Each structure stands twice: as structure tokens, then as C-alpha cells.
Image (tube, rainbow over all chains, first blue to last red; front, side, top):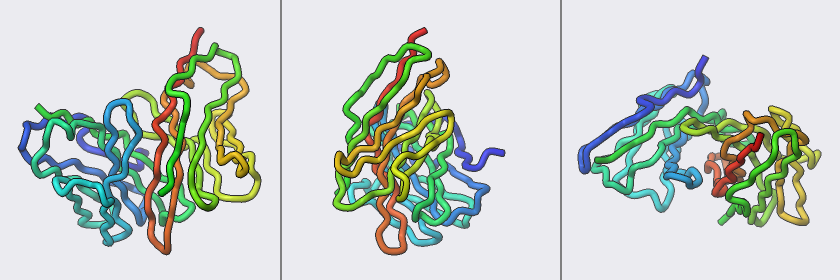
Length: 113
Length: 116
């Protein structure tokens, strides 16, 4: 009964080669978030979708994009991964964002070689 | 902008002993406050949350936290830790403006080590 599912759990990509990470949810939540967590650091919000409305954090690099084709799925696209993009990427959902807890997936560990 | 400070990077506690993890926030009003736990290689699990009302909140796994407005703190406590509590603990602040959802700002985390 996993509620927020991220695929794959581990992803190895080549420097500069586009990569897509996937997140799906069975909770029917309005909001989906993407966080980047580098080794031994706090998760950092990249962007989120409130329904179909996309909200980008001011300091998120243009190299990172996201798509949400429907309520259940959200994708993180890294157009040209650099070595500095190696991190754990966490997807989270919340019912409506206000006073609602965020449910996290298990994350995708991205390695750039 | 809001910020969260967890002053202890590592804490070592003996199994069965009590635990307190510190968290201070910086924000102009009362924020929404959370504690999450993360086991190695895993996502984050919510332990407890504070929005308003009673300043002592109970969470899962025997954890509790107390909101102190005067100290801008939201410290996490557990009376008796178990070896399975070894993990990374994150304090987080939520800020929602208007009708949208702005996500969470996390502290840098406290790594909890349990000694047998």
C-alpha cells in the first residue's frame, strides 16, 4: 500500500545526458513537490505543482524541469546533468498544502558519471 | 524568509535514556512546524506537527514536541529511546501564502546514534 512511489530507486546517468525521474501517488493529493537532498544536507525544495499550476523556486537552476500530466504522476527532468546534480531526489505530496502534512516517497538516488 | 536551525549535528544517546533534539526557527509569525525522521537511503516520515492550540504535541513512535513561542523553539523529545530510533531527524517549517502551497524549509538535520 505504498502511497508515493518513486522510480527508479537508483539512477546512474552520464554527464550531460538527459534523465527523467518519476513519481506517482495513490492519494489523489492536489500538491506534488520535488526536493533535492545532497549528501548530509537538508532537503531543498526545487518546485511544486498545485493541481496544474507550476511553482518554481527562485534559485532552482533552469536545468531542472518538471511535468505533471495528470493528478497521479509527476516527472523531474534534468536536461544536462552535471556532477553537482548527484543527489537524492524526493517527491512528496500533500492534500492541499495548507495545514496538510507532506507524504514523501522513498527517493531516487541519482549518480552522475 | 523563514529559516530553521538544528544546532546539534550529531547526538549520541544510550538505549533507554531520554532524548531531546533542538530546533529553532526564524519567522515573523507562528509557522507550521514539523518533525520528520529519515532512515538511511529512505524518504522522510512525519513524526508530528504543530499548527495551533496545545503547545505540547504527541506524535508517532512515542515522540512529543513542545512549541515555545518565546524561544522560537520546537524541541523533540522521547522519554526512552530504542535502538531503532537511530536515524536522521529533520525539523521543518511550512509557509503557505494565499491559497497556494509553498513547501517546507528544513533544518540541516540531527543524526541520532544509539549506544547499546
